[in-house]
Image (tube, rainbow, N blue to C red; front, side):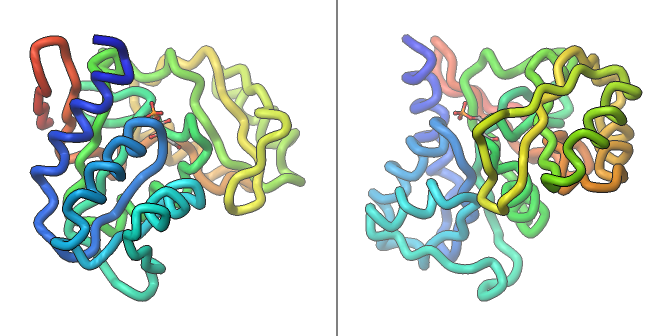
Length: 218
Ligand code: 5RP
């Protein structure tokens, strides 16, 4: 099976967690498969809260109603992908640049189900360049501070987030204490969000694999 087929398998398995109400929906190629599966049960849900404009467009095209988070309060379920997960289900996210809205919807959800192909499970976070969303005027300052933390930040040129900000992708980090680094980077002036999801990790990780979807809990 190729990587996309494994993503699709994980997305289909996540449908088993959908019980109705308003579902939090993330962003990315794995989530695109989930949205397509969600559309098959749209009569059973009230709608969704979206973490990005691109997911919103895909859901609306399927006829899934998309709500503003402010209009619905806390959610029972959030389904999203990841760029990396360790065995504690702490994640690196933001490869698609939607990390800030993803972190907000994850924070507002009782259960976070992460879907990925099995290559995303790692023993230590950091091989995938860590995305950091930055206010435009702070780009160079934050980059210098990230160098002091041991990383090599690369500006994702030509990319603007849904919030009108920039992304620095930080290479060369070996993240031994994800929650500590999440707090350190989030505390830098000009940082909107870092793509470490350790303070609010996933609750369940579904991995597509050659032998079928595997469920991992911390
Ligand atoms: C977007 C994300 C995605 O969940 C992450 O990049 C994984 O994407 P994909 O499912 O395409 O592998 O965090 O900001």
